[in-house]
Length: 108
Image (cartoon, rainbow, N blue to C red):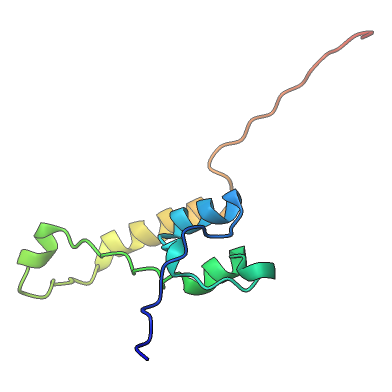
């Protein structure tokens, strides 16, 4: 006797929230096998069926693609080096600005 092709059920047992979850995850609810009572499709069934997320594409700026030679780094020497070191020290050793206020509030 020839075997009947598997028929798609006319009615899928699933809650509206599960159907929405399937839509959001891009899962065809008709292809999900339900594990709940009476073959009901649950949220867990939908989450198991979803495909892994695609990795985001990395956009490389055009100017970075055109550069074929490695960049050249020139060491800083002399007075410029001293100025740079002292600027970093002045910013990290104490606050850049200071504000002192005094409020007189008689008999609030």
